[in-house]
Image (cartoon, helix red, strand yellow):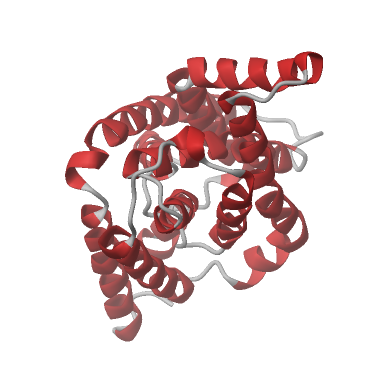
Length: 271
């Protein structure tokens, strides 16, 4: 990959990992539409590490408080809002984690196409729009109970399909369950932490034993840094603006992107 491609893909990953528009779709499309070479496993690990650094940095106090409360509950036999949130994150992670282990290879072989991305981009964009329009919201992130965490976790399984958007589907589910826009976003971001770790580890296992060139190490370093910067800016601005602008800009973007992809398919520009 060229330096321009590395920077572009890293920024795209950093931004779309947390916006409700699907990071997997935006990383697949450059190869499908622009003819860019596949970024490879090492680069995938790099941009995931960058996203992880950003979300841990932004939520460092929340993560610390949740972790301390979760471990403390076993000593003092008392539940707190933070320890319950820790359980919610654990339960919300399990469905997607299991589905990833069982279905990742099949999805990789059968669903990484422009047609699938066009369909899921539109369908789940409309679903996010319905949630924005009709859901009665108001509860905060620390009000998320365990049954709701499981529902959000089950919804997160759908994000394995390219174009769905992990953040988009979890925010949509949280909105339908009655949580505020900010609460939906914060829980989605916190829920991303164990999954990003798991995804990075899953990809890394295929790299074990491989000898990377100096050029590949440069790509890894640059990809990690650019992804981390883009993701941190994205999280900060998203949480600042979401209550004001809502999810409609992302719904509109998804519908426009889906329409463009359908036109490209119909004209034979992509397959």
